[in-house]
Image: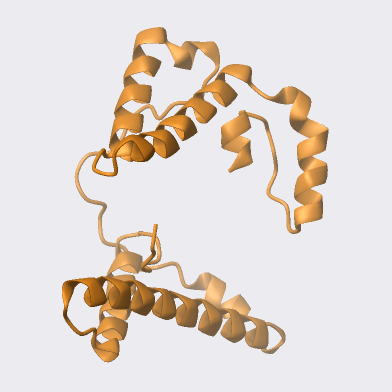
Length: 171
């Protein structure tokens, strides 16, 4: 995400050390206006909730920065902006399964299954933790089996429409 905050051509790095080396090598290519916009957005996102928790800081930040971007012509000044947002819902499509044939080879299977189970378990634990916190304050009981089914069903539907994996979170 530093790549987008700095507006610099940073590459994905497999380790934190490689990421820092990459950052050091490209820090001089930081786009000042992009950095200023990113930091201003963070101030809005973090500052407004301190004023009042009922203020939708994310919505206000996006609307304000989008409006200012259009008014000041930031796209013409080298700031990367979203040009066109497709309308409607995405079309259904079968998930790309070709990667599974490579991962199902015996040398990858242990890593693949271990990572898959770890991610699934963490997503489930996080969903249960959030559900329990909310249910305790609202006076109802969370059914873990129902929560697991809902999480799995949500992820299947999300995969069919090209969405992100679904998981609960405190933020």
